[in-house]
Image 1 (cartoon, rainbow, N blue to C red):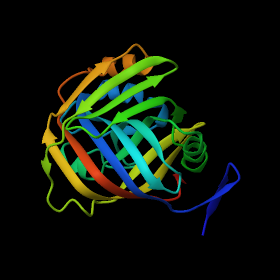
Image 2: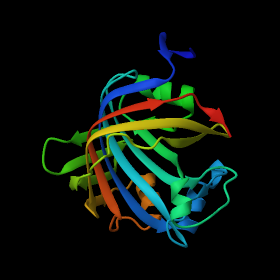
Image 3: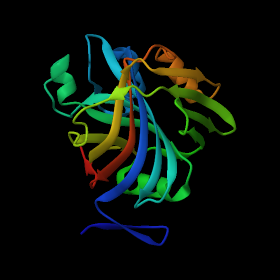
Length: 237
């Protein structure tokens, strides 16, 4: 079994998360603008509609897992796997992976593990999650500047969401793009059209989001009250 030494601790592969709460919103953005944002990765965005890519914003409360407890925020894009045919629409989305562009966390151990094991773009940030009310809220600050204040309203239960199709996550660090096998088992999944509100701050990432056209109406939002996840070994692509 492969393992990694992080801060004097052995982390065995695959890395498992036994309990987490996930809130996410999916936004249609201009494909050319999204391509410009992730050009450094060598990957191409998937087009949900001609000329439209999908930007995903999510926040996660990791309550039990191999990398301890922590809060996380993610900015990601649906992308075509390397070497794919470049089909558009539903065919594009069926084979899409998730490229993780920015992934702030609030604990050092998961930061070091995420960067060294998979190349995830983790940075330390102040992530305040308020998950006990009808609205799920994330207040994200980096370098004492507000990035965003995000609200998500849970929707209706999603039948049969317990076993979700495994997806590939993609990362890029130090000139190397990697594929990370990733699977999720979801309990208490809910979905609704739109369902998110965002207030952007004055951080450079907030400017990047505004250049993608945010804040705007989300296509849909999802919440998962209890999720288990598995992250496999990264492979260079």
